[in-house]
Image (cartoon, rainbow, N blue to C red; front, side, top):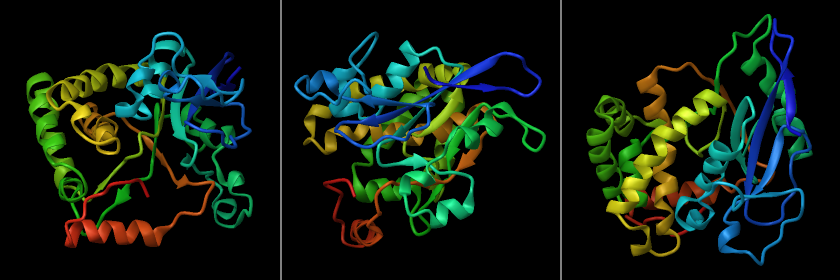
Length: 285
């Protein structure tokens, strides 16, 4: 059973379920609000992560699209199969961080830096010092010397964004101004990490998935190699801010932490090579 929280002024507890997307065995946060999820199970039926992991090929699912959709198969599973009051997604190597700055900076056990129920409860339910919000997102990533569009064009195929704009113009023209502003921005909420009320989560999925489905119809992922074929998941990361700005929904931010040391040198050199040498990404950093 997922973690229950009690909202201020309410007698009934509400449930919080945050899926942790993983494709291989990995240590999971101990807090009961987290649900380890095996993504891409339909593509790798021989891989067994154990009973603690919920496979994404159960119920109403798109597990067989994981090679293209990445963590979106977990988001889809939550949309169609989870009725928790609050639903969200993090990754096995990328989590929301605790609001305790001292612990975040000094805890030797990196898993102690991961957000727990007591970090998200005051944000979602509200308390004497926090007004409740329905949406939690990671702090923005800043690119500084690149716009969202130029960074993507240097690292992947900018046609993905161009066609996404065409689709928005046809399906959601009211969102095009927000998309255009995002493309020229130098920061964004990315990673496909968020925690939302069930109503907001389901609303976002009903808006986002048809866009990605149409995009993959127009630009077949199978026309790329295995790394490039995951572009639908990458494009979807940039749609969150478009939706947030268009709907004007309030949100709160939490920092991001990793249970593993991050090789910032490798990330930084990859970023600079893409911008100044034209070397596109061919693997994750």
